[in-house]
Image (cartoon, helix red, strand yellow):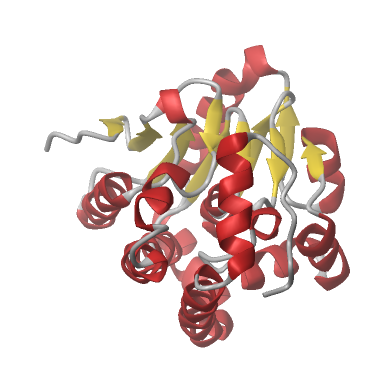
Length: 263
């Protein structure tokens, strides 16, 4: 199958899904999310695929939602793009969690917004030492989605997750490791080699055992996951109707400091 927004390769039990919108830091839009859904379905159904790797082309893993798409709706129906795009993105997140094989996020560069949700949904995360992380949503008047408000607190704790939401700091790879946001940090030049070694080890492992163990890990969380995804979607629609969101997006495009009114 041919894809427009990802590079999809399968070899020796390893399927690699590479987000391929490098000029805009692999930002998520309808085309990319749809390609991810299709690729994940192929991986789930393929008996030859024993492990899935998700990474990014270029300098970023994934910068989150494509703000240019959001801007197109700003003066007409700003909530509609979120209503539809998050619905597809939620299918991506559920597809990763329901994948009966290990899913490895190889974080090659910057991560923001929904990119962090994408990485958090994976089973393991390996980051290049130059990678940086930012929550980003609240700085433009929006709210986290993609199960961010479930998965990130599970990984790093409620207090740290609240800190990220309220203060929106930029976090380097070492700090992300200390927080528990990633499992491993390696030098940029070694990222591909180390991730290939781990993927190969997983591909050679007891696949059925991995699948059952992942299913058991998911069991207690899946009801929460489905509810949280829909709650976040509803919250994003509400946030997109605020004056603060309009101001935040305006400030982003004009590279100025937003002046939020709380409305």
